[in-house]
Length: 248
Image 1 (cartoon, rainbow, N blue to C red):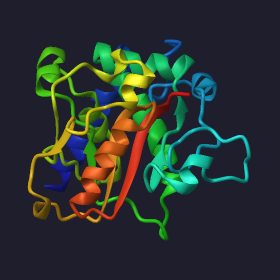
Image 2: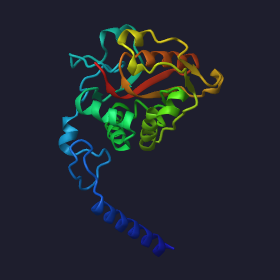
Image 3: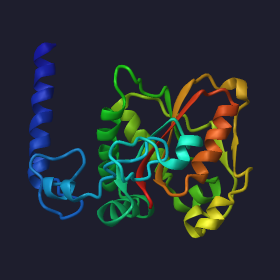
Image 4: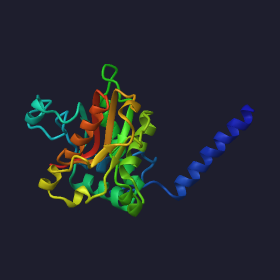
């Protein structure tokens, strides 16, 4: 039995070695061959070149000028969420990765974004600050999902779930069909209808006290604020927000 198991592991190792030699992993930005393969599919140079959000507000993710501050002015009196994880600014290489993932269904670019998010997640949550109990991807209308054939927020949440072992709940929220947010101006985004997002289940069916909403880009925070209000009404006490990039 042990010999068979050892033989299977050896066969798997040899198969991976042959596969990597014939089809080596390449950097998703500069296409340089990566040896050995990297979980984020980025070479060290492109990883350093990413536009990192170095000093974000812990509630809304906006970059702060003062390194000693943890919250921006508006969030001192009206915080967006309890904790925001948003490691990249929505520009240059980060915007390119997100566009390739979201609109061209390129999973490798999504993995690059997820790995960058995980780095910030691992430094944000400690023994004194536990991880959320579940991940809730920001929903898209079923009509948009049918046309696109791809739910980027759900896939991003699944990638993060695989690494953090936090379950994903996709059946808690529903989005009403309407014009996509990316096609709206900032003023139109801020006037998002209150019934755009609704709960699929009765309030009493939600048994979590701490959750994280997962999305691709944090822009005005209007979507997040609507979802947070729904979740708090359902009895969830702590709501975090995990996004790949922050638009400024």
